[in-house]
Image (cartoon, rainbow, N blue to C red; front, side, top):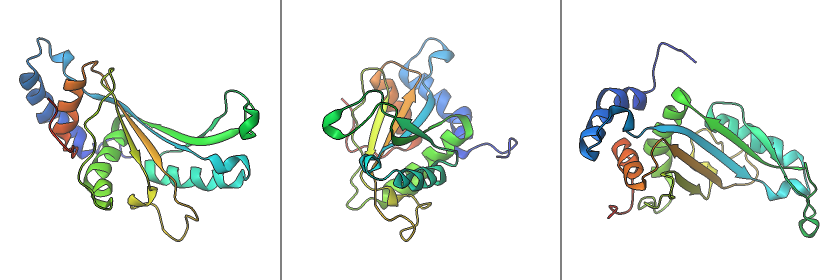
Length: 186
């Protein structure tokens, strides 16, 4: 990672979007301007209960998508009905911050989401904490995933955490980055 070169969306945010958002939202202090603090990518692999090797291939592909090493997540408690024991690896996740976070968001908005079949936009629903969760049904929309190397197609959860607690401010932030929402928030 080159420390001299900044991500395109990071430069855009610092030079233009932050000032525009501050004025648009009518905030009193510049430090109240919303920004993205982190992006978490998560894949749950139910097949890992029967075959632990599948988790390694999922971890490898999520590492390629994120550009950063992914870690395995483990079960917090045993569930006999699902043959899950406490401490058993069941998923893969990665947390992106700073430059890698902005680079991933840029690729998500401009390359991957338009690859979704019959794409009309993403939902404009935020949680009460001002964070946004996006579920991707097929990870093959990312250009890093090769059709031949991935034996099975998995879904992916993307959580975008913002510094604001107001969902309207978070919506304005992601809209300014170019997130293709289905409809305008009221």
